[in-house]
Figure 1 (tube, rainbow, N blue to C red):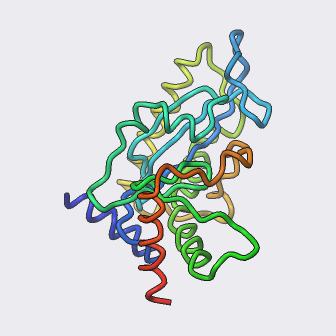
Figure 2 (spheres, helix red, strand yellow; figure 1 turned 90 degrees about the vertical axis):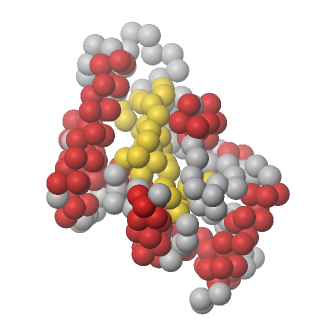
Figure 3 (cartoon, rainbow, N blue to C red; figure 1 turned 30 degrees about the vertical axis):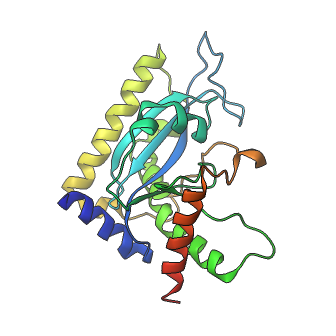
Length: 225
């Protein structure tokens, strides 16, 4: 429980978003084309793993799932053991981008429209500043392990997955030894290798409860404007 409280406090210090226990996103890892390559091509046109990860306020990987690149973030979250088993303390949230479905415990941004209200815009701003932690985490990870700057070349997907998993562990270990390692170096923290989303895949909503939960957080954030 103390660990959860520390994570929530860390995220809240970023921009004031309350009760956040993690930020989630997906990252494409380029690989050399396999002989059996069906299902590995992402929408950007190259073979890849889709790495979906949940990170904490210190930019450490808390949980992850690996799937072929043809699976987008929402599909991966819905069908993976990680996504199905994800739970946070009561009243807490995971922050995610518009490619994920809004759930009572997974908060996404409001749709960006021309007549967007100030309260929704302010919520989106605070949400974005909080969620960017996961973008920074992926950027730092790829900068540390530069083998990901080009397609991975191993004999099998299983070997590639082991390499990816090992670097996630090493990434966390480096941060635990040297917290300063989380500081971005210029633009190298930026994670620009996400998948392409279709318009119909953005801003999906699970339930009225999910909408009410997000509205409650929006109202809380706007009390301090």
